[in-house]
Image (tube, rainbow, N blue to C red; front, side, top):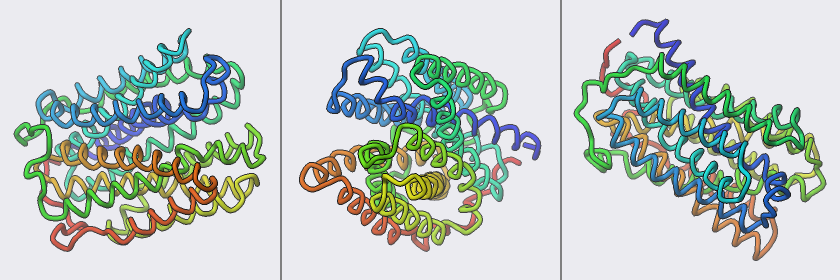
Length: 385
């Protein structure tokens, strides 16, 4: 693959990740107030709907891990984009709560399908010395999608259906681009099973623990962050601006983190995640503080997920799609468990204590680094360049 082809793959992958994660999955939290009014939802119902997205995400990750080596990266990536388009369009047209739920589930499935497929494409088509950089640039699409969703939400205001229709159009364009630029071959590795083989090669235990802790730590901001800002006096516009900053700075973090090497970058990114989470607990009702905290969290979260992606491909060089699928599966499980546990902490004490607990989880995650046997700063093998 030439440098120009690598650039085209990186750009198409970044846009598809942005559509699946930033629009079809994470934009749900931006519109919860509108959904509550339109569909008469209480806090419990909105939480259950969000949890359903996590469950479908986990199932889709496992499916992508199995199907990608058999069908090729392009087929699974385009399917992910089709799910993102269908999900956002379903929400735009939703006339009832079941339709809203269906749209959220389709969006969750799209994000679960897309990461293993794109990781497989990069691992098998990009030269090994450039794989880490391309993987993290593609993964930064989450930040791009989040940053795009915010301005659209501000422009459409109460016309939330128009916002989601815009998301559907953007998702369809990203899907068409992926259909052209993502390689269609299966690569040179044999198809893997439901889980990576070998299931626990050297370094995989550290990868698993790190992913679970990072997921649990990030759950506070993703699940309760905007509600905390609004509850503490920040208006809807101010909290949306903070959300935009979360995505905007996150979009440029992956490549910088990759340059530092995984062990040092992992500790730095998770400690930044901890600091941003704690800072939001200090003064969530002040726009300046909330904006700095959200921007720092976004940069840290994109770096963390990008590093997990590269870490997984190096722990599982023979089955990168399955390895990335496993890492992102346990990350999502950590987020789901973290949301429930932090919700219980919130009920027992207060929201700010919840964020401090999440910050402590991120500090613990910083201590779990790649083992020496993984050789995290050296590529596992040379692929076709």
